[in-house]
Every structure is written in C-alpha cells, then in structure tokens.
Length: 124
Image 1: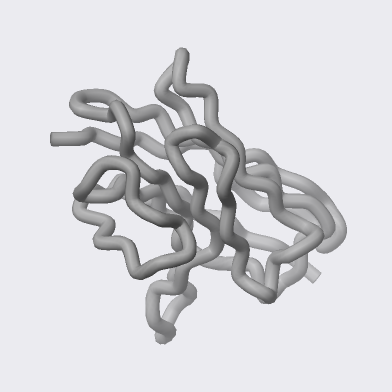
Image 2: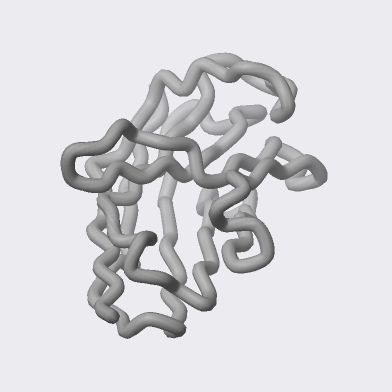
C-alpha cells in the first residue's frame, strides 16, 4: 500500500507560479508517480508522470514548457512546479502512484494509489 498526501495548492493570478508537493509513505520503492487534474464537469486527466529514477518523464501537451515534475526519493516526495499559470489550469490536482514497480512511463500505467487532492485556482 502507498499513502499519498498532497499540499501546495491555492489561489494565484494568471501568470503566477505554484509548487505542489506529494508526500508518499508505505511501499514506495520502484513506483512511478504522477499528477492528474480534474476540473468541474470534466474528466480527470494525466498532467505529468515520472519514473522511479527520475530519468523518464511525461507531460500533457497543455502543460509542456510550463510545468516540471520532479521527485526526491530520499524524502519520498514528488513535486509539480507550475509556472505561467492560466485560468484553464484551475482544477483539483491529484497525486498518484503506480500499482506496479518500474513501469514504463511511455506505456499505459495503472495508478492504483491516490491522494485526496489539492485545489489550484488561477484567476484571470
């Protein structure tokens, strides 16, 4: 089991920055980590993902060049640095961990563990 707790959300003006953190505990060795987001009335979408080593990452087209995912395995924490925020980035952001260890980031990953989410609101 993996337990995830997000933090760092808040209200920011367009063009501003936020850094989300996700503290993981439990069986975290080898898991891939990801950030998803869900806006009201929309499906939950994958925003970014990172392999255990940190050497492989994935970004949705909508956030490429603006968001950066990173992880510190010594601290069991994954981060999402969000710059140049837009009103359309407003959503509930979830941290997720893969069900299996050492999955391929480019492939379809089953994320079996989820946090409760942290709200990000970007005002225009």
